[in-house]
Image: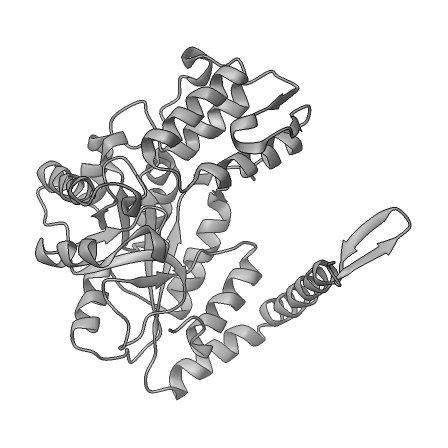
Length: 363
């Protein structure tokens, strides 16, 4: 029996759930007061001057939009929020490139100033249409990690394909015994679709690629969605002309594999080829050495020692993950932690300061 369950009438709520919700509300109130009173800015300025050594934070983003994402869309950051975040980091922190961060790590030294590196994963078209103009306006460098198999095509990363299946379906309910037994899912509302998508995503995330693709095709049949239904006519990913333009204007590019597989779930030789071919394609297109790699999915279990050594051998100087934390002189350049920034601006600013000055996430 779960001792954390409280029964109130016919409702069950967890003590932990209420505690977490209460903590989140209190934290937001405190963060709001700190930010809008100007206290946070004063603290950041003061600590930056008083501390002799500082760590670095690598921010990572994926998708951007002009509007808040709906209940049945993949998460993305409004470009207006992104611009606020970039103004904030430009004002209070030293912005560095991944090349500069790699050099600092090579020397095994901390920074004299708190530093921030800006990174973006996958290579979505909105990186060019929305994020790039902000970065160019503020003269900020960034690194975009490209999943090269989708660049210049009408295809997109598998998670986008999965969402497209749910969005295109007109089915009001469905069942999928292979994964969920007798459970029946209600798809009658956008919220239900989103929740069901999340359940399905979590179930197949670590399946081997052929199995994952097969399960997605089976889902499309169950939901009566054919290939034409999934194509909305809009390109989701960058093309090479856009990549080349950005590479000439302060944006650097890293490799993120060809097809975004879970590298630890495929044959070692195939995983190496995914990494090598992604890097080679970018170098061929932009005419620059590619020194940085981002692990698809980005968790510890998504990579292994053999692949890490391979990345070293072929000349990568850093590997980034999606594990949360900061970077200091003791960090492994081939397993760098990053922070996924959260809006609104007062939460972003306070959380960034917490990571930066309290060294949260150092392991």
